[in-house]
Length: 389
Image 1: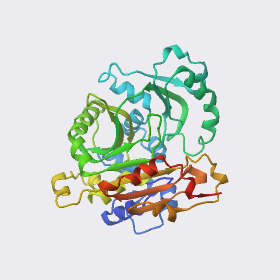
Image 2: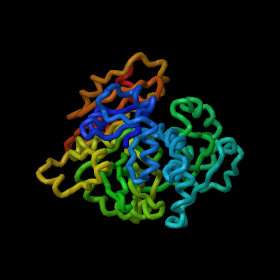
Image 3: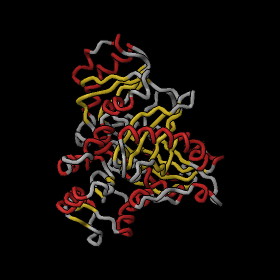
Image 4: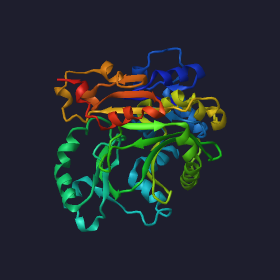
């Protein structure tokens, strides 16, 4: 069963729904975004009835905006509880704290941030909304002086995005402070089958320009990345799944690997893969894996076969967030054609209303191993050479 909601659904996901005749719930949001009447539309009443009759039915949503629908209509099931267990970062830390007894974290109400005693904090740390998305209001803070500086300006920052997404997606009522994890960061798409066994569908290296960078600019996947980290991530994810008793459940998880090769979770995004149909779609470019089909049909990737006779390339998702310092309403246009010329093999560009969402779009690319400079260049770019004011 598919729940579609704002802000975006890809043509690839719509095509997948159509070819497989996956049941898609005819919510107002879904019908406003997809005009194809040949899809296997089911009414909201049918969807609710079917789920209450069989709570092993697999639900996939393209967007966390759909959480509100689930909380309203499936409130007497376990599903909303499972979602909130992960969507709320404080609840998630409480869930796994027995496995990470020395990990420092603390929940702080937004209206208490300015008065919170700095002496109770451990630097360096990460500050972010307990319910968040897209690195909005996420900061790495190295000292008490820097803490005071950021806290004193956070009201202004929150004003810039507080109306972009519904409260189920971004809620600034509470923030979490937690210790900064040194190490490489990865994003993983996976699901738990009807027996509770984890199935990994993609692993992407989240690349940063510096230790202070908390943006979502570049995610890359490759045969080497999958083969290097698959077993380690499967072991960790199985621990999480067992702890939360997950079955028939998809998720997108972000983790870091520290110097001891331990997997430390950052956050888990429930009931979906990467937002804006990103990481779910790029698996098809990189590995000819349809992650949506794999989840609904309970399929497991045969990585040996997938990598056989396939050239080893790097496939990247590039998030064109507006880090230019120029307000969206002051920008006349963004030159997507010029951007594409700076890449060896651009696969797809998705343009986004940057005035509304603060991001110019998403770029999918294929890069040769010897040409990774193009990824380094976009990683540090302020994008001003593509902006016309």
